[in-house]
Structure formats: structure tokens, C-alpha cells
Length: 265
Ligand SMILES: [Zn+2]
Image 1: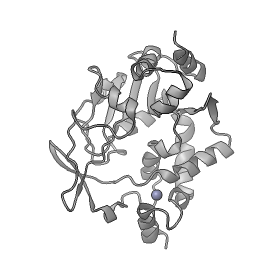
Image 2 (image 1 turned 90 degrees about the horizontal axis):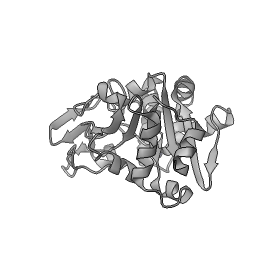
Image 3 (image 1 turned 180 degrees about the vertical axis):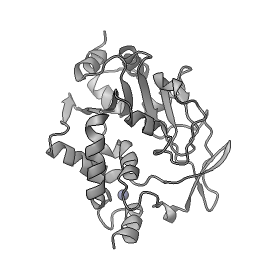
């Protein structure tokens, strides 16, 4: 058994678990010398078995733009912009990637009985999304290896559930982004356009201060293994009551400022 697999078992990963993984390959490699991406993926699969699910975001943000400068999503070819591990994972022959032009997911295991490659909801991280299914399962965990809450995709789900005042307001107007996803299969209207996640770290700080989660390190790699049930209700409450803390400080981020200017000023 590899030391990485030992580590996964030690932090609590078990058979049948549904795992949503966010990762930095560089950080994992610094903690587990010369480990390959394949070894990382296979170690998780081996523990959870195909009665569990391994899910990764493979987002590409292919929004239609006013000036036509947008990329067009191709489910098979478009590279994931959410990390090196996700790009390798999505190409495994036994892994399915969904069709959302902006927020596709790649997954393996039990979840393949629920979703197929055609999943592309109008609410890419809300209703009828992979994320909605994931957070409503008993056995779901977020595994974050070497990343902080700027990678916490569930934050966007919480924005919708709370909801924050700007949940369906696109903050990317200044980039000419429209509320439409565009792929080789055609265009899809979007209900929400997920915004900037940089300030999700204020939710991370809150969870740490309240001792709801613990900060963990192995060598120089930070990590979290979070039971989704333990953070969803507290998350909805936090997002509802502290929405303004989820925007970047005024003047530092055009996307967050556009939401602040419309709803908080
Ligand atoms: Zn921002």
C-alpha cells in the first residue's frame, strides 16, 4: 500500500463514500514525493470502490461573449481549467464528463447510475446539477488537497440556496459575458452565472473559528476532509446572514464590486 493511500485511510476515507475533490498536484507532490496523478486517482478509487463516487470539477467557463471572443466548449477536447489532476481524470475511459459548457464535472463510480454525459442544467451549480445530488447524499465528503476555500465549489451552491442577494446576477458584464453557455452542441441559457470565489475564504475562517472544521497539514500540504452534512446547514445560514463578507474588499475586484454596487449601496 502506498503512503498516499495510508494517508487517505487515516483521514477517514472509506468504502462507499462520495468524494468531491479539489486539489493542487504541486502541493500533493511536495508532500508525497514523485507521486503520479494516476497513483493519486487510483488510490482513491481503490478505497471508495465503485459503490462510492469520485467527482471532480472540470470547469471551462465557456460563456458566450458579446464580441464573440468566447471559447466554444467541446466535451471531449476542452481542457479543464480546474487543475492538472482533473484534466487527467476526465480522460480516463471509465470516467464520464458532463456537457455543461461552463461548469462540467467528471465522475466515476456510483454516480454514473444517476447522471450521464448529457447533464447540462440551466443552473450549472444548482438545481439538477451534479452538485445538488452530491450534497443531498448521506455519504458525501469534500476532499481538498493543497487548496483553500477559493476552490470551494459548494460555496456557489450555497449562494443559490441561501440565497445571497446577487445569486442570479452575473458579475462579469465588464468582460462582455452573457448569461449563456456555448458549446459545440449549441447554446444554453443560464439562470445563475457563478461569480468570484476569492472571498469564500471568509467562510473558511468562520468554520475554523467556530471549530466546525480543523486546519490540517501533512508536511507542507494543507488539506481538509469535510463531511458535507456538517457544513451545508451552517453554510446556508452563514451565506444568508453574512453575504457581504463573501465579496472581495471594495475596489479590489470588478466582479465583486458590480454585485456590491447593485445590491449593497
Ligand atoms: Zn472578487
